Length: 89
Image (tube, rainbow, N blue to C red):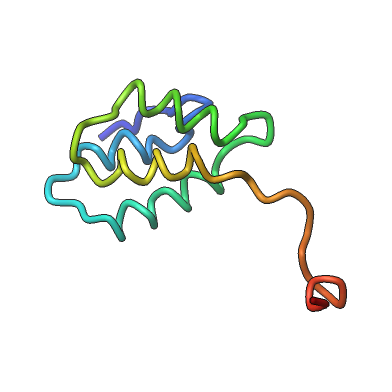
């Protein structure tokens, strides 16, 4: 079986495949979303990619649609938060 190459917004075709899985739940979609986000090239803005993928695949009532919508509205964290500075109140 030949595996198709994804595009810059879905390099591993994870989002496309998530919409094809019958009976997929919210937790599985969140796990797929994290894997998808980690596979994005640095040149792709995650919120814009979520919006584009929603236009492509968005399906009313599908858990991945809800996860992508959350990803679109959640601002990306900038900078590192850790060490002594991250623990100060």
